[in-house]
Picture 1: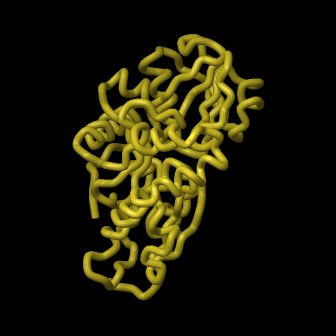
Picture 2 (picture 1 turned 180 degrees about the vertical axis):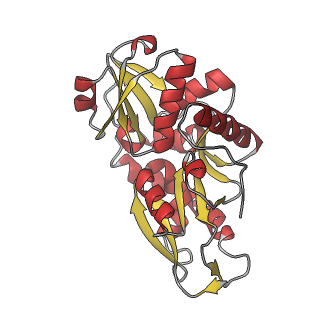
Length: 270
């Protein structure tokens, strides 16, 4: 049924999500939406508990949280090399025995362990840790870091595994890290077209204002503006097309087979 209550959206405040979030953060549909800002794992928790109606959350959570629908056509994916989701290792991949996990993103945690297990033939002992590169590598052979933290990491003298690049080399497919996911019981907005078009318009506004996003990131990330623009236009993709759906199906199949999700299920869209 239609509702006069605000539609509650949980927002990832990472650079790779900035174009998707831009419209919402700059007043799009302000009379309809209430925004909350979290890391992906907390977005997922709030969506599961019903504290929010929609969230830009890790793709693996689609298999773990019941009764969700996806916003069609949108995601955070990487066609080949992502640069912001990496394993930094002191030893070759085949020799990794302990892996420190930044648990801010649950999809990356699953992908890292699947790649090490199936691509490199090692079954590591995973250790959940705060995203502190020094502490992680002091305790473990390798560390998984994601997002803006990963973009700022020191990589000299370390072996770097870019997870999207490894997935692409293994499967020939892009990798889908996150999706806009909406609770089936979310109240409907009493407006033509409902909530769906707002998500697409928010991304359109982000693309229109990409120089502003790059300028803000330049002050905090430490990359040059050309590097940041390349990251947001080439390393990251926001379109959920046929190849991305194929990749999701394969990732979900492997996640279930490796015990990271209870069961597979088809994609359902708004």
